[in-house]
Image 1: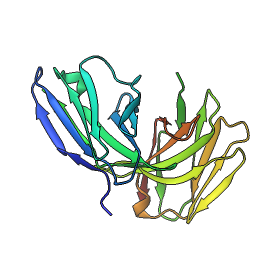
Image 2 (image 1 turned 135 degrees about the vertical axis):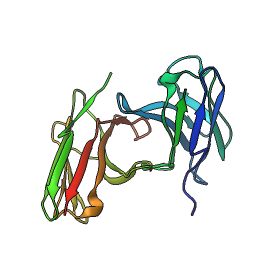
Image 3 (image 1 turned 90 degrees about the vertical axis):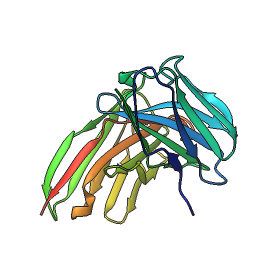
Image 4 (image 1 turned 60 degrees about the horizontal axis):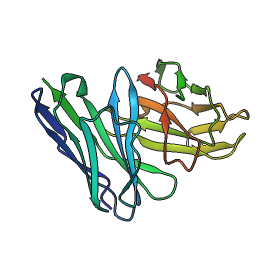
Length: 111
Length: 111
């Protein structure tokens, strides 16, 4: 079975540009999570969905960040406009039951 | 907010040695999880603990859920080179939907 799929794996952009990260969860999983990992702050939960509905977005840093889940097999995390401090690895994870399965991550660099 | 402190931050050990790391919290958790992250990959679940006092093994790995529900430890016996990576604890107060991750322990194994 395919795991969680994320694209792109690497993204380099300039400050002020819009960035869209994509995630395909594991089929049949009813929860989807977006995390951000940095050296300074570690692994932080940004937002999670249950059955495509956002449940908790308290970790979203500011209004420049938005996430959508239009259907059970796709989610996006958008940053507009991007800033250098947004540089991080962004992970998507999905679960059904207790175990969260993580994708390989998207390494974002904002110049 | 909740914080999970892991120790040690990093370890250099000889192949064949046993490893012990722990995680402490300022708050009570109902679930403790231990993850391993390889370079360029997302975290992978190693062990899940659901009851205070629970001791669970997975091959050479053993983890325990502290009686106070504010701590957990992970032991790795007879370390091998592929044990290299970053180990994270994670806690949840609910159904393992919203996880708080620890700061990580970086393990390096010398041949």
